[in-house]
Length: 162
Ligand code: 6OG
Image (cartoon, rainbow, N blue to C red; front, side, top):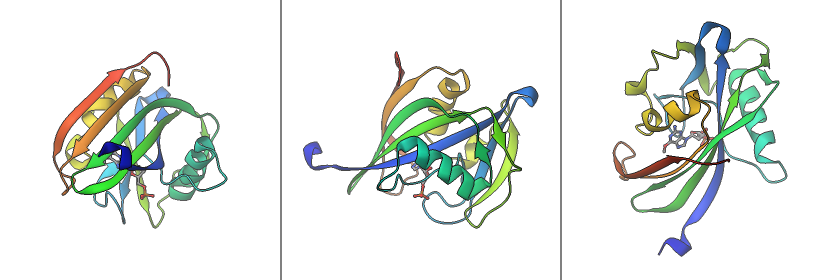
């Protein structure tokens, strides 16, 4: 009964250092996705826009201030035996202030765009990172088994605009 599925809004920010062809990822130290590298993000709270949430989470988790925020894509994640789907709004940041600093949630680390550690990331990432890196807007739905390790169905495509 998909009509009864609830959705939670989440953000995910990828910070780029174009001059050195690097991307900032964080090793998640606690909570959902612990032990995996990911962008920075979290839940959109009541009273804030999705973009405000994206900037806030980046500051909270990596201690940097986004000077730009470009929508990259939207993904809807669902899981076996879970009525809650995650609608994740993904953004690119190309300019920021501050020095990426480890927090209780995340340990930031730069990776060359050609050496992204997909084997230590969510299984969906290698599907949509090429769109994100090429700045092609994308949308998709990804359904995982309940252990969150295996993708059962997946549909990610380039779209006209976010
Ligand atoms: P907190 O619940 O810790 O935020 N997230 C995912 N990221 C990827 N790449 N794949 C997934 O596949 C994800 N599910 C959630 C969204 C969780 C953070 O993790 C992201 C948020 O940035 C299922 O506040």
